[in-house]
Length: 439
Image (cartoon, rainbow, N blue to C red; front, top):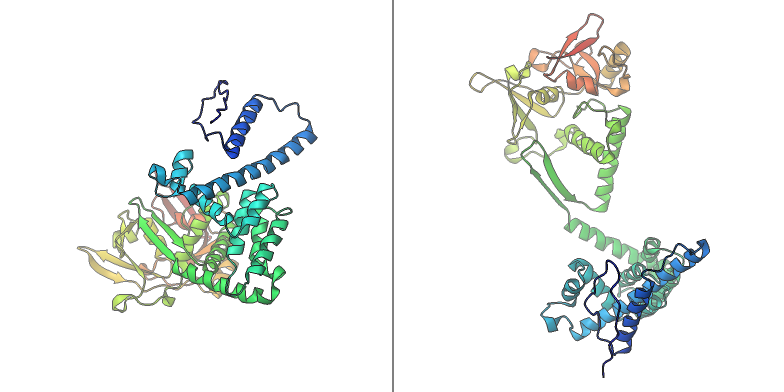
């Protein structure tokens, strides 16, 4: 005979769920009783608990949740053994559980995997979870750490010792700290094989990282390129370090002779945006003579095609050898830098001049410019030499060279403005230059 437990769900704002279990089995009956107990507590106020009581009760509720999680995982493992999902047409236990409880499939499958692991070799972890000594996230960390131990180098007895050591450590460390301990657990329980195991683990991780390296990029049609990448940890750390060095240079103004990507103050920008600007600067400043030649022996260099009118101040867009276009102002700015070949056209796309890649001002030249100009030469600007870039007063297309006499220091903002058609600039006899916005 099957007994039925009646539950009062007629509370304000509550709806009756589907019966979670069929009462009769002791586990099913206990679950039903827990529901009834929680129903009774649903409208019991907690404001009357004092500080000590709420601390103790909250800690006990967390421990209780771990014990309930153990029961849940034990039931999941049993459901997987008996194929509970197959009876209703589900392909896997995780797929059925996700639909039945409105979990995501990814979460449900991860929890099924943990349940199966705890039902086998890792039963001591399940016992600790049942006692509330280990939290679910700690249990997952312990299982992963022990499973990562090479069966070639580590005997079952050592695996068991490592497992018990981590269970004990869970009483003092959270899941994140426990993960760190788990990575070095052999140094504690089997130091004689720890070094060999660590070497094997690192080699496997590095091989997997190299196999998963990816880089994709695509244009969105609005002047931007979006990309995704996956790198091994070493190269990722190197890239972050290089970009952060450029971010620091943007912050202090010590950017060398690289062009700026805008006229806003980078100090006020969020770090991801500043890293994006740093990455753009890194691409611009990478020495092209270190790159291998592309097909046909052509150097890996972007060619900017523009009319002579645009070079001398016009507004017509410039074309790129990659098929894109950039503004005339951007092309004029790039003409001041190395690594860009400006192909100047006139008439019916006739090549008037194919300029050579230009060198930056040398360090002695920059020192001389700093001594002479004392900082940005724009009237009203007080940026020091360290925050300035060397600008060519006379462009290469007009016979100018990279020299002190025909150069000046400009801060990032004014170096952008001097190539921007929205502004006019007028050199003064005292070496300064004035800017005015066109009306």
